[in-house]
Length: 171
Image (cartoon, rainbow, N blue to C red; front, top):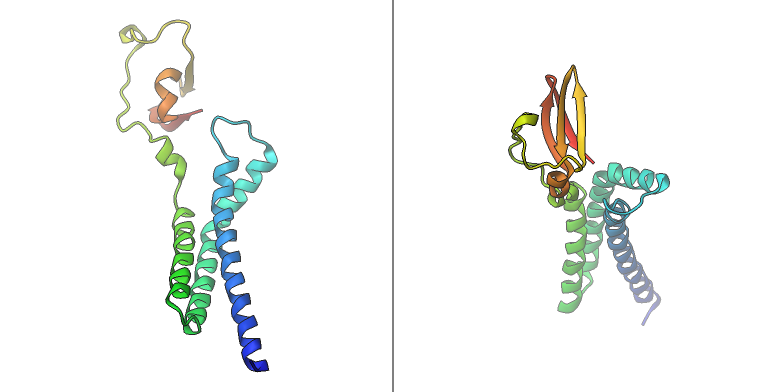
């Protein structure tokens, strides 16, 4: 082995290492906010701040990561030789593309689908909410609405109009 082939081999090894780093960074960038913002778990101000910063920057960071990974894959592909190395290169793109796609999604919308149709009733018409049950109450411009927590438990999000103002009741 001459010095040139050793240099090329080291360069390719660093390329593989850089590709692995991109995979790990992009997955962390997308999944850390999902891990820190868990609806039924106590959250800290620092955790929320980090999560929102990562979510805000994730579309840009994942595009940069995807383009960098594609450039690396093309470069590594040319010297890959064996089929299993090429398979590994393609496999490395799967979590990168997934992270780029997930960075543009709101997984909470999947978990807590808003009510498709909001129906309202007057207090006199309601017989399914007991007096001791908790409700989320809203008053806007002299008009009031109450949303039973038991019914909101799955959806967490109820779009409505109260007092002529569009609101989203959530907890």
